[in-house]
Image (tube, rainbow, N blue to C red; front, side):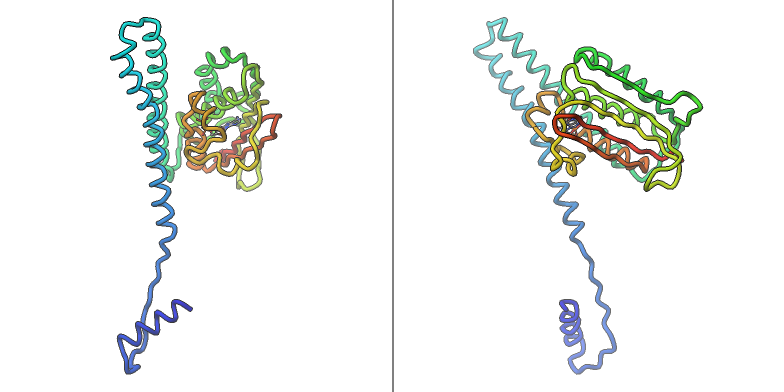
Length: 272
Ligand code: ADP
């Protein structure tokens, strides 16, 4: 009805006597453009906030070190340790932001290298070994032997980042002494996929996630408990990066969690 009213007004303006044969009116729905613009603004606000908090801590301690703590050696050591930790946090945040912008920039380009997922898992676990040992994690890995179909077209570095982020979360949120299970399987078919797939499950027996959070978990900076995430060195970008990389590989990520029992992240990746 609104379009018809506008049409009549335009037609009347152009040809008051009614001699006009037709008018072409074109409508463009810009609500999604506005939505994208809003998301961009939120993102910039989030990034600024995330960068500002370590900076505030750093400048606070610099002032203290220049003033009252100047000649207090034990205090100086303590403050410097906190400052180093905050600087590392900023470094991680900037690193994650760069990774995110890199995957977003070429999300449409399909990666073509042949990647062996067992190698990706092996490299990731080697990198996470210190954390696994420090936290006393009981790790179990079920992979695929060569020839069992564990290869897929992909981007090796990006897939390593996916596995790294998922396993690191399982260690962090699974808690000290927790169990982490990694299971890689090849399937000839999978619902929603037209060909063979690889599935990778990363499961922990931690506290789990309330179902209300699950739909938003892969949004940038979305955290169930911001304080806890920050304390553990989280940036709130890990799962957003995972989601973009999985999209780029035309895969799917699903999350299954039971409060008090644990969480399983299941990745399904096409093999063709
Ligand atoms: P962060 O840097 O905060 O870990 P992520 O994007 O990796 O950011 O994860 C987003 C949030 O999802 C986390 O803050 C945490 O609340 C929740 N989360 C992720 N993995 C798990 C897990 N294995 N168990 C419980 N909660 C998790």
